Length: 114
Image 1 (tube, one colour):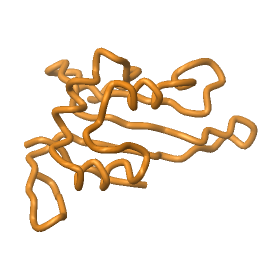
Image 2 (spheres, helix red, strand yellow):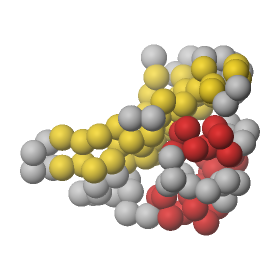
Image 3 (spheres, helix red, strand yellow):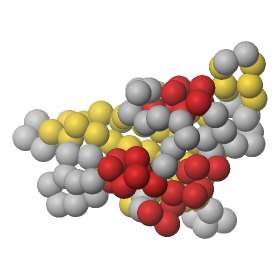
Image 4 (cartoon, one colour):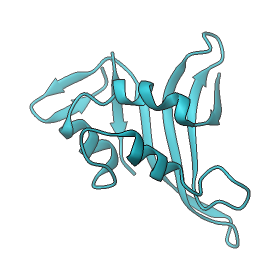
């Protein structure tokens, strides 16, 4: 089982370790961040998130057996009136396989953009 807990400043270093280069960051986040990722960018990312009525929720995914962080998910553009939202960013920790400029399942992370 996986448990979601709010992503916070204590999680920054782990997220940095999952982003090996510009190409990976761009696949994961598009133009939302610049490489290298910095504390300043992540503090801005967290602004107005994870609060009552927030339009953005940012989580870390934790394996309940090992209690290790295994992923990251951001849910944005939350529309509470119409009860809908968008998955904006998902990272899963896997073995990293690189082929050219494409990443796919594989020991650091695989990114899916939605």
